[in-house]
Length: 204
Image 1 (cartoon, rainbow, N blue to C red):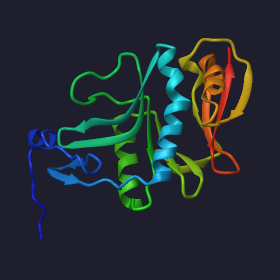
Image 2 (image 1 turned 90 degrees about the horizontal axis):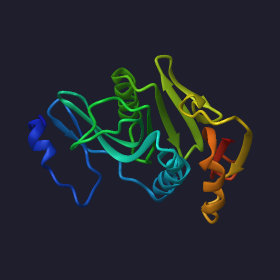
Image 3 (image 1 turned 45 degrees about the vertical axis):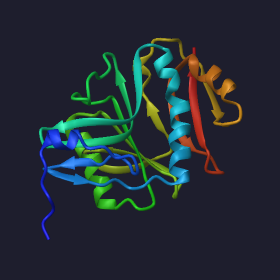
Image 4 (image 1 turned 45 degrees about the horizontal axis):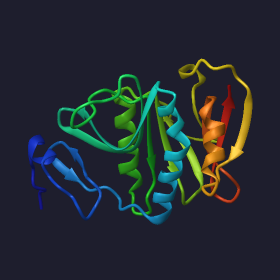
């Protein structure tokens, strides 16, 4: 049975109060995986880890951002990092500096890979995938999906002097975390032995 085709403006006017906002691919509304508790925890953790980028006033961290990748292609990214200027309007029309997806239990592999490839072909230089179930992080490039020990934001976006430091993320002590990340030159995210996100920062 063929799926119902709708126009871009009709898609943009849709309201979804009971489920995640869907993607739009070639005239079809494509549902996204429902976030689990672990998915939400990782998303919140990444938000805390990346928040200092905004405080440094050279980047904007955005969650659940709608991005128009092509005239008939809209994706809702879990996390995006934009260097100045930040996107304006109803949706982003320029590639992010970082696009990150968090795997949900009901995500289909082929659909996740399609989303990552869309980001790469659009021109996003850093495409990340975080898998909470496997406790692994990946970077996607023209070579495909490669598992990494950590996901790093390059030091080129900050000019502060480099001084190495690392600290395990602890949601119960965000004040200390913010102190360490506020003066950073590099930031990377990995999973610790217990599955909690681990932040690596280079302090100024």
